[in-house]
Length: 284
Ligand SMILES: Nc1ncnc2c1ncn2[C@@H]1O[C@H](COP(=O)(O)OP(=O)(O)OP(=O)(O)O)[C@@H](O)[C@H]1O
Image (cartoon, rainbow, N blue to C red):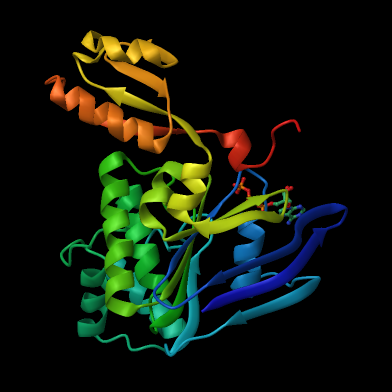
């Protein structure tokens, strides 16, 4: 379990964290969402013991051989060593098993090929992220921290990493905390979200509850969508084959049903998030 309560941190006059509290239980994936400078990395550094909080309570617990592993900002790897050599070196530093079989099992766990023997500097960003996760998983931690793990990945890389995170959760029941400023990606991976703004957690809850509270419109796409005359009853904005419709979740379900009755196919339906509302930055 990852738990922190009323954690404060200042760098000189800059207040990075202000009474920040989060909780991520066993088998849970918690997303920490915040804009640039919100305090995500500072919180991760405190959880990993790399930075000391000014005050507040931090608890990391579980049955793993080590309590916590993680990646901060980007995976710290030795670029001139290959994947096997990187894992062997990090394992040795942590006093973990570094037999050939254990190294290969680590590579397989994160979906990396066993036959790449060239230096890690040649690896794609997605492969480096996977190897970084393999390093973080050495010694079977109870908790895993991933700071912006999706940045720099293409859509296929994002899907593959999401699947890896799901698999880890299923196989190990570890507590996983992921930070990002891209809520779209986090919303499909995380069971719960905590929204951080200026070092303060301003909302925590089930992902679907948080997202539905700040969704006031949806974008529907389909080549025939403009033929649906009943949509003129709603506030809409058209863009090519897509139409953004101001509607609630219930209304949008009814709209999709009506479209299907009229044989109008929809190729996608995306919620449009009101980010100002999400980050609580609307003028009151
Ligand atoms: N070592 C440091 N010295 C001084 N100020 C710092 C230091 N590290 C972070 N800060 C400041 O603390 C605040 C929080 O930074 P932090 O890196 O935790 O935010 P973040 O949410 O991770 O941002 P980003 O998404 O841009 O990585 C920012 O105002 C940042 O400038």
